[in-house]
Image 1 (cartoon, rainbow, N blue to C red):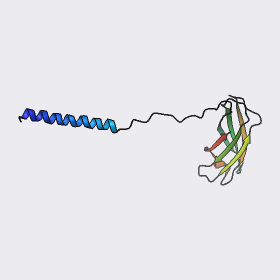
Image 2 (tube, helix red, strand yellow):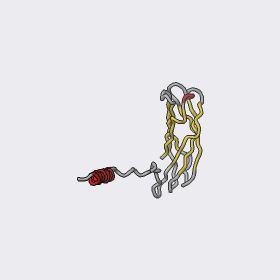
Image 3 (tube, one colour):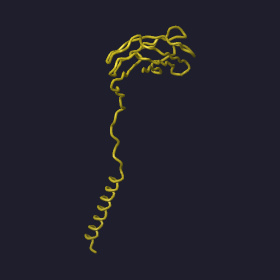
Length: 138
C-alpha cells in the first residue's frame, strides 16, 4: 500500500471513529431537563384559597411579639380564613405560635391586614426574626 493510500485509510478510520463516537454520545446523552418553575398552587373551582405573608414583627416586652400580616383570598368562593402563625429566632431558642381566625369572610380577591400578639418562649421576643417566621391560612 502506498503512503497516500495509508493516509486515506487512516483518515477514514479516524473520521469513522469520530462519527461513531458522536453517534454514541447523541444516543446515550439524556435530553436536558426542561426549565420548569416551581408550580404555584391554583385555586380549585368553587373553593377559597388563601395566600398570606408576614409584614412585620415587633417585640412587645420580653415574652410577646406583635405580628402584622396580610391574607388574600385568591380562590373562587367567599370564606373566613383560619391562620396559623409561627415565629422563631434564628437560633431556634425563642419561638411561639398562635391560631387566628378572621372576623369576617373574605370574598374572592379581597385582602385583609391583621395584627395579633404571640407569646414567645425561650430567650426573648426581641430575638424573633421575620425570616424565621411564617403564616399559613386555610
